[in-house]
Image 1 (cartoon, rainbow, N blue to C red):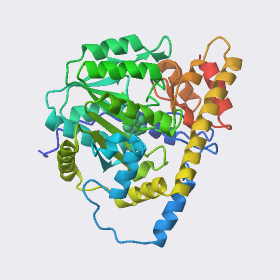
Image 2 (image 1 turned 30 degrees about the vertical axis):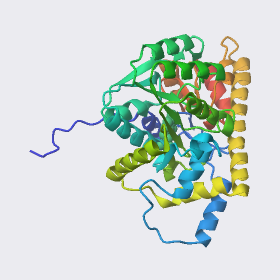
Image 3 (image 1 turned 90 degrees about the horizontal axis):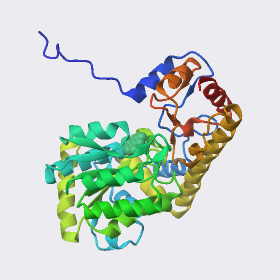
Length: 397
Ligand code: PMP
């Protein structure tokens, strides 16, 4: 018998499965709201101007592709650290933060998970209910037991904040709590600044290990506004891990560019910690790729490219908000019996629309693809497809 003869077929990725069904659909008017990708108003994944300009410069200064250091390009790590913690922040000046380039946000989470498993092996991990579907699998594959904490309230379409606090207060000291820094995926329901204060307090009181996943910085209220929560955790003291991703904010999905940052209690501790993070990277993929790190480092540290990036990111953020607004207004006309005003309050690329699995199934008959949970990608709506989507939703309600 073959060595692999008895292997079971692994379950299909639920979201990629939607894309497969979408691709197989021959209706030219088909619309995919199942993805986690930002499209512009023309329905295209943008290639940002700031990225094009940086790439043009890199072509001019063609350079050999030697290995990067294990922790990544120094200029990248520095620029990312300043973005995540704020340039000139005390934690950077005191050299208490370490940042390693990673293969997207997923790679950052995986390095963080493997690192934590070495140094806090008995901790359990808590993710929001619901969360990005890869969080659980990622931490389980690092060897952790993964639990949920209360988060979404389907009745209010917002956060069940009392339930969340209650969950946090029940966790054992040393538990790892994974929090979405902004633009919660999949629900679009974020905490208020006041609620963040209470969460930080509960994390501190409980001796929990916070791990902030920041995959959508700049898609909520703004780059600095969305990142401010990181500084608040730093100010509260204690350990902190932050994964961030440029997949969405630079529209560099396939380039796999992100970073993991860890805050230590002293510069000396940080140096030891970095040496261990490097070990995790070394035994996984040795060192990260050069191209995307150079592009992002150049954009972040060249004033005119930086300004261009901030403007382009603001453009994406504003367009999503306009689509939320349009969706609410148009649904109010076409489906007056149902209140969708909550879509306006949700933040980031996604919305838990409140559509049931059956309704999502009926939408599919209209060639409109959403996730069974009712999650729709607002960033896939545009001025040409929104009326089709609204009419179809009104029909299936
Ligand atoms: N965290 C969350 C919450 C995400 O939504 C995503 C991706 N959609 C990631 C992490 C992973 O980011 P990347 O694609 O950069 O690996």
